[in-house]
Length: 253
Image (tube, rainbow, N blue to C red; front, top):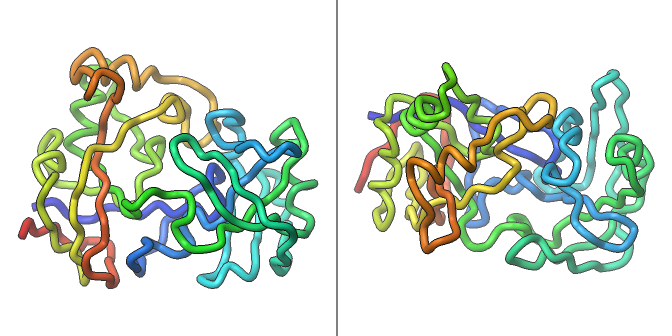
C-alpha cells in the first residue's frame, strides 16, 4: 500500500522547495504553495525553465501570505512584510495568473540570481497559478521505472516538484487511480488526469543545471499522450479538505 514519503511546497513558484512533516489541504490545495511568482519588468513569467539557479533560493511565507522570507545560498536572508502594489495578470503557460505586484526588497535581491530585473507577484487567491487540480502525486515505482529506462541508479523526485511523493508503489501505479477517488490522511482526492511534464524536469533540483533528459526518456518508453504530452505522475482535485501527514497510506475508494 503506497504511503506518503515527502511533501514539497514552493511558496514562490520556481524557488526552492520546503518539505514539511504534514500539510493542510484546502479546496485550493496548500495555501502557501505557489502563492507568489516572479515576472520580469515587462510582466513575463520567470521560472526554473528560464533561470535554473532559482531553485537555490529558499522561500517561506505564512498561510495568509502577509510575510515573505528568502534565504540565499550564501546565507543572506531577505524578509519583510508583504505590501501590495498594482494589479497584474500574467500568462503562465496555458492559464492566466491574477495577482498584485509586491512592494519590497525581494526583486532587487533576486535580480543577480535571475540575471535580469525581477518583480514579485502575490496571487489574489491561493492556488492562483494552478488550473483546477491543486494536488499532485508521484510514486517511487514510477521513478524507478524512469531511472531504469534512463540508465541511472535513481532519480530524485524533487525535480518533478510534485506536492506528494509516495513510496511502496508499483511502476505507474498512480495512473490506475485516474477517474477514481482516493483517501489520504483526512482528505479525499479525485484523481483527474496524468501530469504533463516539461523541460524543468531535466534540471538538477539542487543546482538547476540541466543534467538528465527526462523528457526524451519518457517519450521513448511511454510515448506521447494526444501526440504532445509526456506524462509522469497524476493530478487531483480536492473533494474533502483535511490534513495529510508523512506515513499516511493511500486507499482507493
